Length: 173
Image (cartoon, rainbow, N blue to C red; front, top):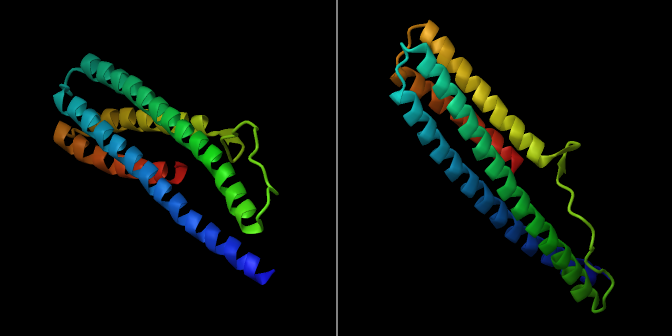
């Protein structure tokens, strides 16, 4: 039986390497999208005339829409990838166990994928990240105007804000 344990353990370790590759690929895709979003927000910020309150508020509202759309797309992408992974994982684990035993002992489930994270659907976590970014962006711009900051200084502060969002995104993948 020890030999069977070793066969299963080795197969699971080999499979874990593939899961780590999948995870790295998913993170890379999302981080690349966040860099693109950062460039878009920075461009919006650099174009707005901070002396014109109405223009600033319109830009903040527009950024809120862009951010909400972006995080909705990321959520959909992650859900799709994770659902696909769930299906592959079922087959992989069944294949590892059944292959090691030499008989069909485990069958892949036909159940529904559950994307809960700490009791909430993953899409809710992504939506909250988008709402948080939009809120903080608006606050940063409004506070920056009050404190006499320039567009360039606010754009530099945006980089730090987006660094924090990238860190959070890594945790959600």
